[in-house]
Structure formats: C-alpha cells, structure tokens
Amino acid sequence: MKKSIKILIGFGTALVICGILLVLPPVWDRAIYYGREIYADIKYALFPPAEAVFTPSESDPGYVATSVAATIQSSLATPTATQATPAPTAQPSPTPTPLPPYAYLDGITPEPQLWNNCGPATLSMNLSFYNWGHTQVDTAAVLKPNQRDKNVMPYEMVDFVNNHTDYNALVRMGGDLQTLKSLVNAGFPVLVEKGFEPADLKNEGWMGHFNLIIGYDDARQLFITQDSYLLVHEDYDTSLPGFEVTYADMEKNWRAFNFVFLVVYPPEKQNDVLNTLGPLADEKQAYQTAYQRAVKETMTLTNTRDVFFAWFNTGTSLVYLQDYAGAASAYDTAYSLYPNIDTPSRPWRMLWYQTGPYYAYYYTGRYQDVIDLADHTLDAMSEPVLEESYHWRALAKLALGDRDAAVADFRKALDVHENFGPSLYQMQQLGETP
Image (tube, rainbow, N blue to C red; front, top):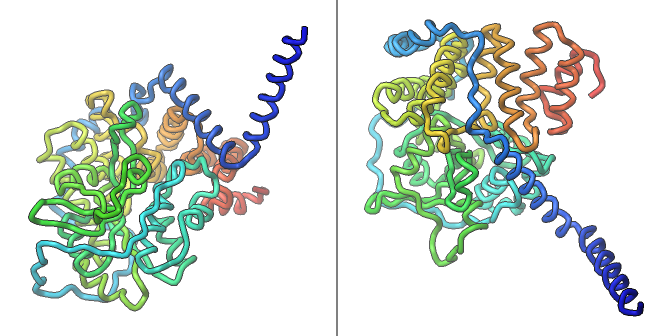
C-alpha cells in the first residue's frame, strides 16, 4: 500500500514538474515546435504533397501546346508594359572597371535563425553590416508577427528597411553572378532568395531560403555567404569568413526565384548602388532582362525541373511587365511540365514564396483557376497559414459574386498576418470590420 502511494506521489510530482516546465516560454515554444513537426510528418506521410498536381482548369490544352512557340516568338520583341515603373536617373559607367578576383566584406554579425525565421534573420544580418544594433526579433516583429507564417517576401523586406530603419533598400530580378560580384566589390552585401534542399531535411523536399552574399573568390569559383539555417545546423568555425557556395550551385538554385536580389544601403550611397547595377538600375529594364533570360533558358536547359523554373520565371517577368495573358500562358506551360518532374524533386512549395500565377490568372478573368490554385496550395500545407493564398482566393470569390466567402477568406488572411495591408484594404472597401 505504501509503495503504491509512493508511486502515485512520484507520478503526481512528475506531472507537476512537467507542467511547470511547459509553462516556461522557451520550453513551451520547443514543445509546440516539435509537436508541429510531428503533425507535419504524419500528414505528409499520409498525403504526400509532392504527389498532388495542379492542372489549370480554364486553360485550353491546344493553347498550352502552342504557347512555347508563341512565347519564344514574343521574346524577339520587347514586352510592352501598360504601366512602367519610373526609372532611376543614374546612368551606368560606359566602360565597366574589371573586377578583382577576390573580395570580402567583413563586419557581418552571424545570426542563427529562430524557427522558420530565415528571412528576418538574414535581413538583420544584412543590416548588421551597417551597425544597425538590432536582431531578427525586431525584424520578425514587423515582417511576420505570426511565428507560423511560412515566408517573408522580398518586397516586405524592402518596405521594412525603408520604413523602419535609417537605410534604403531596393529589389531587382534578372541578376547574374557578375551582378553579385560587382555589388560585393562596391561594398554592398547582397541578399538573395534561392532554392534549398538541405541534406538533414532530405524528406522535406525543395524549399525556398535566403542567403547573404558577402564575398567571392574567382580562383575557387565560389561565393562566401552567411546562412542563418546552416548557422543552426552545422558547426560554424568563427575563424572562417562564412559558408562557401560554388558559382554553379548559386546559379542553379537562384534560378528558382528568377534571380531576385535585394540591396540595403545608406541613403547617401544610392548613386553608387545604381551605377553598380548598370542597366538593372532601371526596374522595368530589370524585368525585361529577366524575361529575356528566362525565355532563353526554356530553349537551352534540359533538366525538367530547371525548364519548369524557366517557364515559371517567364510568367513572373511578364506579370511585372503587366502582360497578364502572356504570363498566364507561360504558367500554363510550366504547370504542364510539372508532372514530368521526378516526384521527390518537385517544388511543391512554390506558391509559398511567389504569387505570380495568382496575378496572371486573376487579371485574365480566370477566377476559378485562382481558387483552385489557392486550394491546392493551402491543402498541401501541414498548417494552412499563407495569407497571400487566402487573399487571392478571396479576390476571386468576390469577382464571382460570393461576397460572404470572400470576407471569410480576407479574415483568414488577417488571422495569419495581422494588419496584412492588401486584405485590410479590401475589408475597408467592403465596409467590413477586420
């Protein structure tokens, strides 16, 4: 009897201790993290997201079949944008100065990312170069107030820098390896978004990730980077300048995001940045450059996934050039290729990071495709926490006359990302309380 009482007391004491530990924020956060990981593993095992395929329901199969030739033909002419972004006034140097074979920017404070926080962490590392004095906790408080938010868009980072710091930032598409080296040599770290398939997460598949380029070495054909994920998951030797990424790997993985890059700089250095960018200083020209490169790659690349990315990039560039019909055609072609990608390699998270197809289908009146693509994207998530997908699904439902369903989706977007500007604006327009 006494032994039973002791066992009960011991069990009760253990429960009390566990309860006390769980209410401690760090312990509770880790418990939630591992709980979500277990749930995600179970869901993905039962319903493998890479096996699901989105097929645009409103596309004409014949139109998709001829879109390759049509888009290649259109690449011979410069796309016409209905509304051009004002171009910077700075002009590139007529004769570029040859770059030295090596450059490295010291002064970055390495910062291992918190859970799902590579965007805020990489941006705060970038800002540390200018002695900003804050961390990813401060960037994340604005960029992703919901810890479960899966991604931060480059434009959101630019808005953060321009509105919450004393520095300026710009984002461009269509960069290349020379662009990265030129900016580093001019004294500016470069933040890039690229594909990522870490070895320790081989069962997770393809995902997006941010890197900070802080150096290059032509002799060894590699970039020197800071990587918030690797700072957590690999032993980091502080005597080394950073993590090394070969030129070939950078180009291959960067392709998935249309070679997008972001530069943070002091206001007085703006002309230096623009002059270093050359033709890419003009935002419209950058989109045209990205478009021309993407179309060329649809004809020259052979790996199916790379060709998928090239067609996706073609669509994204045309969205920014406001050729929505051409963009929809390019995305249709990309999605027609998707089933031919080896299943474990399929980039099923693509719409977590890029929203171009929503623009293309919405602005060509293909509202059901917007809804279906949003459903497909949200259903594949272990937790449906993607404000952009809710927002575009709401817009499509509103266009089809389903106001109540649209308002419900706008509210879901705001639940995921409090004060998410586009959804907040739509709610105000509808006279609804967020």
